[in-house]
Length: 168
Image 1 (cartoon, one colour):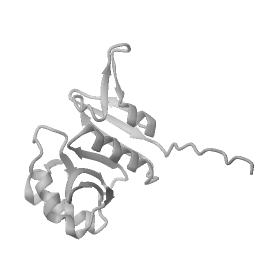
Image 2: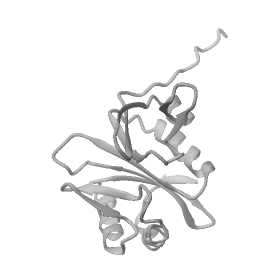
Image 3: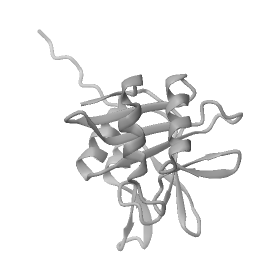
Image 4: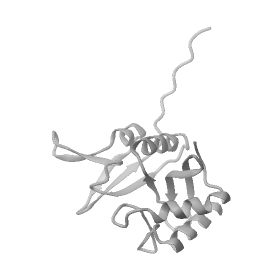
């Protein structure tokens, strides 16, 4: 089940964050510093910010434990740049949270990730370039910058196709 973060999730949230690898994309940037969420103090502060509406957070839950977190950060920063951070255990959790993101009608979203992050990008042998993953392409994300170790993706607006109602 995917839902918005609530007060009762505190211990599950912090425990999930502690188990993350420090070399992953499991960080947020505040005041030009990278803060890794596997630090309990940082995870606690982010949790509080989410409850106050300074950040948006959605969790995927299975058997009363968190299996994935979709964090949209940048609401309290002075810049209007919202970054999506996705922290998951499995590919299925990744797909579910990305599809949930599509229904939030959020525009102008960014994703900054390592080149090795298979949830967001892949290297195309055909074109010899990095391309967004299938799920991100479907959501309208495009690569706008490739740096030494990271890739920056952006989604301008919501791309959703509705079927025309048939005649009665």
